[in-house]
Length: 298
Image 1: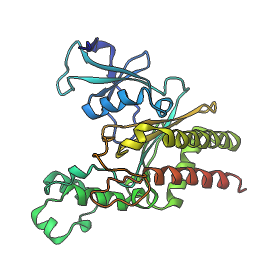
Image 2: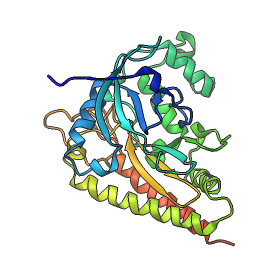
Image 3: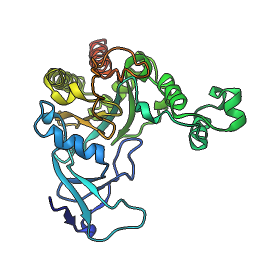
Image 4: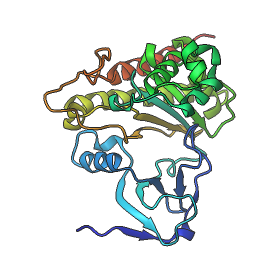
């Protein structure tokens, strides 16, 4: 049986600079290690990817661990990952959730009051009369509404958050390709203010990395045999021109049922397990190219 690492609790602090939706979800130390709450499916995904074509695109994985002192409200076990931002000088981070479907098919379930409260923060007008009366909504309905409000349904990806800069955009309602491109342009402006040449260099580097990711996905046994639901691409850049893109958030990347195959492009219908992940990747590249073209306009 593999021994679980025991790490010193005092060496780790909550990660302070996380993209939207991840604040407080990680612990980090001064040596470039990140601890993330261990979920069995995500642990299995990282382990499978160690021998896969997608390996160069994930953060380095060092197994799982417990802490010497368990803090109140903290997980019992963590995944041990490399902090990909440590090689950067004041990194600016952009988190893109990829795919047209962001939930597992078995998550559709019974109506829930907690999801209705979340819907109410978006817009109570989006609820049906029955949902308003019962003050509940199914996860399927809630997730589909969120996907339609954002760019997920149309473009196959959405910007979930940015860190390392002040961002007042309502990202949950950034829907059109043009609006997403504006957010990406704002991201570049914060990475390299006023330096169009450096901004172009960063975009070219991002697109080159995404092209290599696409080629790796086509060769990947993991990609062929798994849903890519809920996964994200983490874009990192700094004012020196250093940049990178990593595949993260793998907890819902579960194996396909026996006899099911997907192409990651076909629209989802219940039972086909399609996720629209490649659609999202294509549109991320296309939107970055639109941003590049806008940088050429005086």
